[in-house]
Length: 250
Image (cartoon, rainbow, N blue to C red; front, side):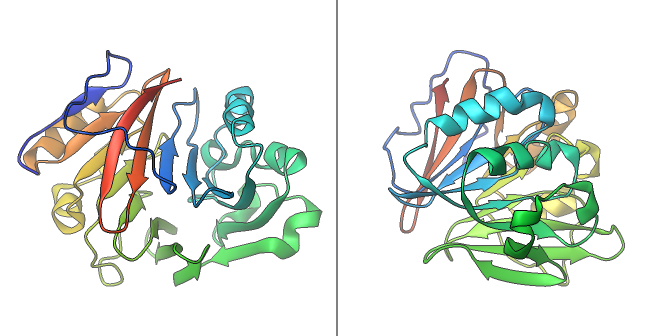
């Protein structure tokens, strides 16, 4: 990319460089009040959830999900077992049928899983790759020193990376198209080395207090930046060998 775009999603939306073509495959980053919550539309019939938000955002999360009541939930991925990611897990499982759960093995006790779903949990550890559909797979890379891991979702061409802390580069050497920096992860842990090695084209930031310092860091690496703000969601439409990002008022 040859420019910097910094957009605070609470402002007027004007993105002439991105088209709003609707794709069957799309990741929606929802601007909930607390925690992290994203929806991957796998196809016309199925969706896949990435995190469930903090429990204080339950009404928002369930409201967003109600727009997809006609679709099957293929699975829920918890990228890091903390309240900001799994706070509404039991409420979603009570309200919907979900095929499978995917959670890091470390600190799994931090996220309550109903007994009826215990046999549907894929425990992520080490360096795992698990298919979640005919086109998409999860890749999990555990960092022994940090006792945490990072997660990506990919179709083989497009990679969306959830940054959860220090990265084990002896296990990860891929470039990514989209990076998501979650609500719970201190932005100061992200380094120039991380950005040089991951080489993201777009960063979606769900941070409330450290946006200015992050903008400066991403600008040094010429990364387009989108900071989630109340009322506007970020959509990444995924095509066979390309993707497009657009914003939508809720």
